[in-house]
Length: 492
Image 1 (cartoon, one colour):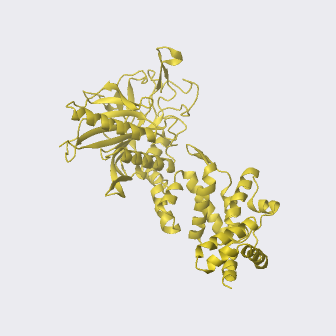
Image 2 (cartoon, one colour):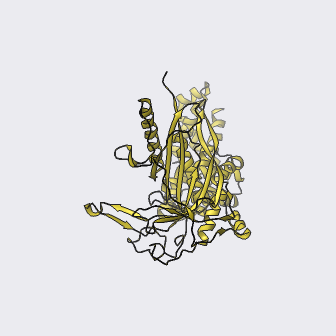
Image 3 (cartoon, helix red, strand yellow):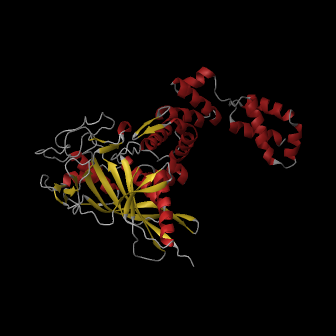
């Protein structure tokens, strides 16, 4: 009988902190500047240059730890991680080792289904420590064999989130990565921009026989900056290791990279021997002390997180799990939804749960197709106030739901509010019972066969009659009044 294997996966997430300047100097941390223009003696590692820790970076790193359920070490320490590579001017990276800022966190993810049923499960986070980023190597620039180095990124403030080996599939790894991503964005700690590399991860992947507790030899997949690529790279690596071991080979501890064009992982360098980074406390930086006041500020700055928002939207507003998930894909989309709902309650006097459902449905069906997000920024086709104004007209019966879609398009194109569009285009809903009855009688007179079938017990034909009346009134008739009038006349 063939041996069955299970995967053991742990992710190390590198997230750039949203600071204006770098971690230990005053150079700009902005992305996209001309090469080697955001540099100084500190981030270039020149002799005699001394680092000074960025207080706001410490605040953000503390906030991230609290949001991810970590215990915060009030007295942590920066350390030197020593290795030689062209992107490391000093010959060491300032990081944290024995005393990280945050430890022992936890996160709920979408676990692999059990007996076909979806489930959530908790995975643990071993530590979240602060460190500076390295520079960027540019290989083969201008078609040459040279490697150029851009030091703009050197010294940018990062946190590294080290997850435990708790994940068992690429799907769980993707869920974990997405949950980390959304928490950091909602906290304002990281902009979530995968394309610019401000959020990226390394994946440690190994396999072992099902039922075995001992960990297998792992490979490290470096610098993956796409949710889709994480899943594809892990799936490929699991299969590669299974084929290798089943054929009598052994997995070599190494660093590999995902090659999207080839659709496979490729070896970068061997890690058969553990790299001795010779960590020791950085003598140029004092211990990092978090005062009670600083801790309280970080704790109080943690907002309502996406998982909490989703639970509240379902409990208080009656939204489905799917709707709640869509509305929490970005912090500004969630804020737009909250503002629109609150304003609709004010404008229409509608109950909050009913208003929330109305807003949620319209945002998903009409608004989101025009929403653009880049990092933590987002653009919307209309303001929350104008969306609430439009939906208030629907709630009051001034326009129908179908007409609201046409009004929304006109609002988006013209920049006008809903009432102005309705007035200009004469789109007010017909709620005159007498006028609607005239149209209904005309429709029934033209549909004698369907009337007979309806009266014979085919109740489903009511929808046909409603459609004919709405068509005759060009969608302007009040649907509720149309239904009531049809039922009354068909019962005669």
